[in-house]
Image (cartoon, rainbow, N blue to C red; front, side, top):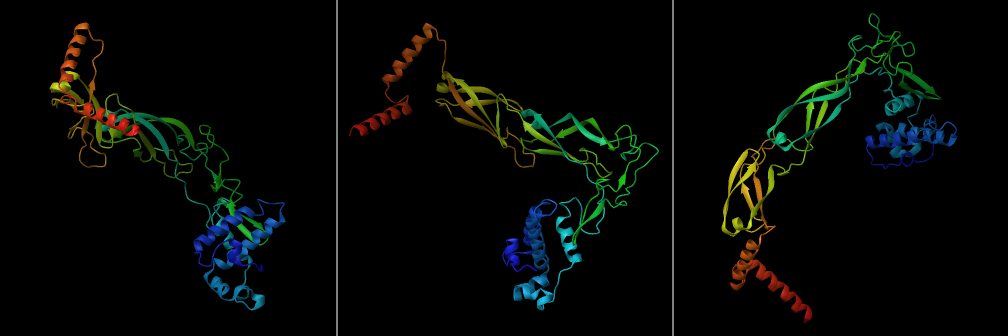
Length: 377
């Protein structure tokens, strides 16, 4: 037996739980397995050393004896009460490495039918569709069960036969030295049967490619990143199991007017200088139609108005959001001579009033003047 400390071999501590010990052994054994290092005797020795350590530390009784007495507590030649044998190593090896080599633990046999693969479909929606919901038709390429052979892969009138290599178990036992492990049967690929006379439609695969047209009901309130699951609309199983699911991934396109943030909507509302100064009433769009928005006199650009209940009802429930309208005061362009003269007259009138008509402008310039004065001092 190895005289190195078993915990050191596996790179774990004495307080490590059995689950992490198993992970450590698996990692080391995968690295040094003889099949992966056929020309490296040192790798084989490290593999055997790790297997010996795992045999002791994975057994609570043996581990306890080792913790108390060291190697003497588990070596029969030194009076210990435990000894390893080929059967124990076989059980350990099959338990830890069954999935690596494609098979299960000792004696578990062929697995049942596999579930078909899940599919994903990317669905682009307009904001109105996402907010109000919709029903859409989509076309999805997928693998479906072959009708002529009913998914068996065998030509009509025939059927798959039991694999002669594994006798229908789907696994074969591989022995190397004192190790024995099951792995997937290379003849039937774990199916337990082979096809002598394959179906001409699917060439023995049991599935064929097909594009399905499906109806997708989009619930109101969905947003980018949400998924809609269509149960059983994924790929057909390769061996008679249930079909997978189809996941419809939602992406909401940008809107020309509105911007969405969760359950709230935002939009910019441009207004002219007269409306901003004197006030007025505007029609603004919502996803439910037009509404009146009252603009008070002396409204500044950037002012936000809230239209309650004009946002989005969340798909998972809750109160409906609001529409936030941000006012943007638009500067007039392409002025006539008469308009230019009128604005100059207005400017002169405003300037003569001092800071009363433009308090923010006056305070800003005062701040700038103070800033430069401080720099000079």
